[in-house]
Length: 225
Image (tube, rainbow, N blue to C red; front, side, top):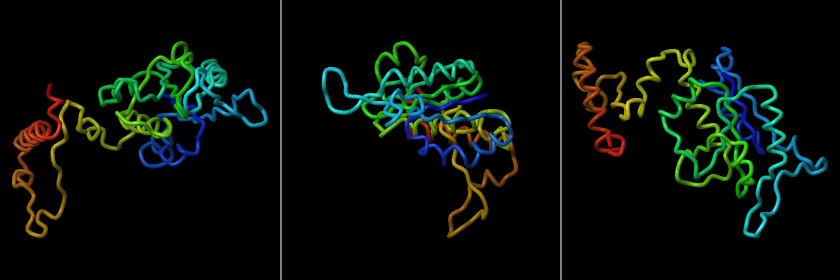
């Protein structure tokens, strides 16, 4: 699988994409990630400008259609993509089921929004899916791209040492994960539930499921709708 990310600020993605599980997945050859500087596709060789004022007026600058078209066209000449994604606050809400679907598909190209947004013609003709990571506005789409990339990659078989760990994460079954504990079994008078120390696997699983349901009902009842 391959993920290409197009951005005006590639520096923002250096740390998130080069540590922990994401880095190990790349080192294992499970995933290829390449970040592309949109300014390299600018038609302004002196200033590498990729934005301009909005037609009709209004505050903020708009990312131009031409450099984005050049970048996406150049990448599509080299690779086939399952989706060309635009990180947008008004896109489909990113979720665990969506991460699951994207992790088993083909290559992905992610365009990071910036400034006041991108020329609508890019959205109309070049983008196949718009995704939002939440109902708030970020300075740019780079952090959203990093969040999505991390969530997708950890689902790829082999990315995590214990693959069952990813399958038991919160939201996989529309349930929050149950509480977890580790040693010592008692600290400061606070004890680990006896059932987890019993060694009875079936009863432990039943307890964990019940805890997940109760926690979801209390904290995220919308997931049970």
